[in-house]
Image (cartoon, rainbow, N blue to C red; front, top):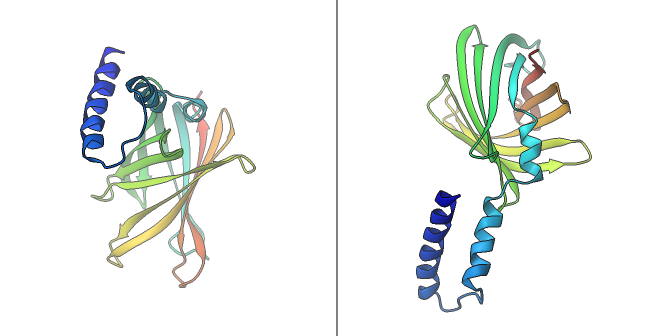
Length: 198
């Protein structure tokens, strides 16, 4: 709590300097500013939803190089835990991909300021860090995010759509979609089915 108070105090000091240079500072008391920072830092219902993903999961991975063909199938294990007082879900995946050992790490949270789910992913098959953000769709019960990565074949940034669906406390599915190699539309690149390890 002391560290959070110090951090908020530093933010207030920096914000005060920024306001001093601004022609139209907002009419807000120091107490109101402190409350705004504290509210932005407080875990809420979206973070509780992320916490359902904590634990150890057995994963079955399907990936498609040709969207009209059969997927390549592999398996893995993912261990996830909430960190920093329930603010972020940190995940560590180990398994195989395309016949090679594979390891990945992800971080997902909910940004109270943006009111968006946010996350990053990095793995042993690249040197970049993918970032993404999105929203929860209550009708489909899915978190749908959009991000991008640099395709090493095309040499250009490519968009992708990431869908997380919590089926039950013990099952969830992750899908990754991207541009069709045929030049129009969107195709599924990857699907990971998770079952909680007993």
